[in-house]
Image (cartoon, rainbow, N blue to C red; front, side, top):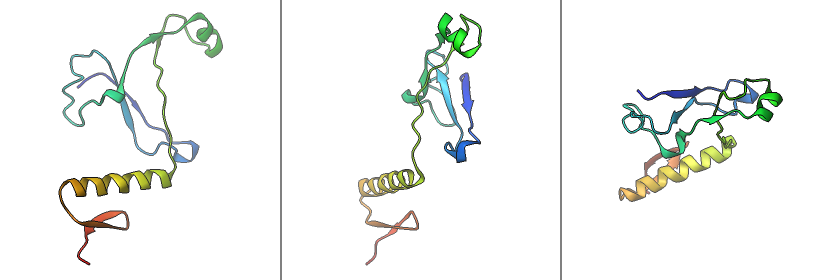
Length: 109
């Protein structure tokens, strides 16, 4: 398994509801994760803590630094995207579907 940073946010009204992981770029295992595979968007580079960052955050200068931008979406945005992607996938398979309570079901009407 590749080295990873696993993140799980339990506060701020559960803005991040599911754990995710970041992987170090260049690791020999980055292309062979047995469970999920490693997406390019989850690969990170290690930086180095600068003097100003060390002073601002009270950490050791020269330590390892991970910088990553998280994008948080609302429940409505997430639901809409999930439904759009489900319908696109069904159309690519040539299936006529409609959504019922967020799930694709055969459209027999």
